[in-house]
Image (tube, rainbow, N blue to C red; front, side, top):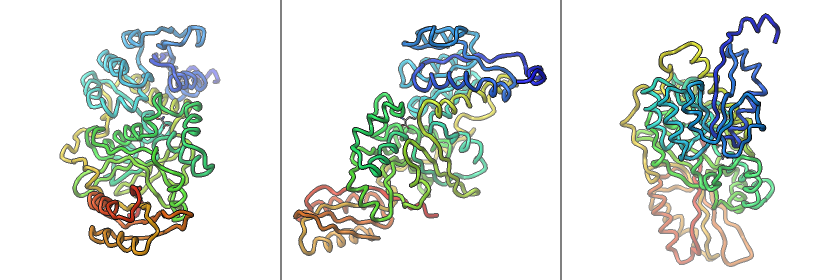
Length: 443
Ligand code: HSE
């Protein structure tokens, strides 16, 4: 930095306290250290970490100017701290740490998607009462600034739908299974070692983490309250190499998607494995990558792609929030400019639809005894429920049981459920029908 530019910079500094020093907290500290000069040039004053609360950190592990303690409430109650970063995760004590920091008039930055998705309505109310901001860019899609894009960049649009690969661990597992025929458990262990997976990895593989993120994006996209309990959630733990292989033969990839759509009768919010056309850009997002495709009525489709997990990528979003809040502090705004979820007046009348009411296409794998006439019986059942077939493949295997794979056109989920029950009741159907939803993103 030359001396002229140093003089033009305000001499104040913004004090930050970090609660929780794991992958994301540690990454955020490191990023502020590494890029401090660049950030000071952008903001006009330094942003200093003055306190860290961690159960495992020792004072010698960080800069000597940083006070280290074990109790996060030391930070929340320190009048010198302007912005609190919450990277503890989970609810206890994270909820109370965030609530008390907001009540004490401090801005808070959190990477905690579970906290925002499940308790965000309460916490945003506390922030509003105290004229402070609870920022959460890093809670969704790691390093991709998707909250800013949805809440600000696309704010002139009526958002019609969005679909995203929003769990890096799940995408990493599916990619490795598809490309290297690796076993599920082995890839999961690697994702944990790389710092991608949640403390409880069932959150990743059973779709809970993705459902948290989808809940947050849907609220901002459609102006509805956070409703995690109404998000349909299905994980990837039952996806087999066999289904990945059949999908490939038919020109599709299997991805774990979060989908939110505004329809004539309400809002769909669903997380599940999905067949998507191989040529669709989302199908090419591999490894720990995340991507979100958003369709607005004015702009059409826009795609946001980047790293969805990991220390540096997530810290990039945490510190971007800290920079926004530092600017807010320096300007001296009496209240935040942006509503937390982007709307001052929400669409409280927009209902979330149950999964039985959604309409989509389907991939079905039906294990049958290799006898004459079984395919005809299956087609007849599908026809009875107004479900039309788009493609069929039947494999010859060295056994009496063969899989019939069917792709359907769009059908109502509740009709498909009835058709599957009738198909499973056929004598020559030898096991459960596998159903994977399919999206072609037309229109
Ligand atoms: N476990 C999450 C993932 C971390 O794999 O995407 C980022 O939210």
